[in-house]
Image (cartoon, rainbow, N blue to C red):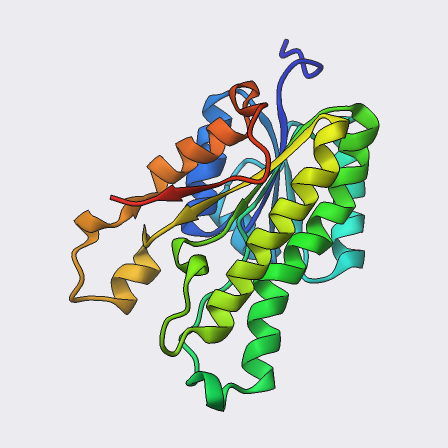
Length: 235
C-alpha cells in the first residue's frame, strides 16, 4: 500500500495545457499525489483519463476567482491533509494593440489571467503551507517580462507584475519555510505555438519536458535556499 503521509501533494493549475500535462507527468513519475486544476471539467477528464480517483483530484474552476480557488483548495486539503507544492501554470498570451492604443479590455484580460490569478490561487493555498511550516510555490512567468516589446504591452506588463508578486510573496513566506519562485521561459514548444508561428524553428524553443524538470527542481528540497528567483529557460 502507498504511504500517503510521505508522498508529495501537488496542486497544478492550467493542468490540461501542454506544459501542465508535462508537469503532471513529471510529478506522477515522482510518485506525487496531484490536484489538477483547469477551467473545464470535460477537458481535464479527456486529458487525464482514469486519474479522477481516490488518489488524485481533477478540479474545474476559474483561477481568477478567489472564491473558486478557495473552494478547490479546500477540497484538496480535505483529501490530502496538506499541500506541499503549488505549481501555477494557468495564464494567457495575446498580441495586442500599440501601447498608445491599448484598450482597457486587453489590459484587464492580461492582468487578470497572469497577475491576479497568482494572488487568487496562492491566497487559497499559502496559509495552509505557513501553518504546516513548509511548502513550495512555483509560477510560470516569461523571459520577456524584463523588457517591453511592440504590441505586447499588456502581456509583458502582466508577466512583469507577476514577477514582482512572486518576489514580494517570497520575502513574506520565507520566514515560514515556504519558497516562492518562478520559471521564465522564452518560447515553449507547444502545439499552440507551432500553429501560431509556422515559420519559426521549434528546435530553438524550450521543450515542455525540460520546463517541467526545472519546475520539479524548484518544488524540491534542493531549491530550499531559492527565494523570489526567476529561472530563465532558453536554448
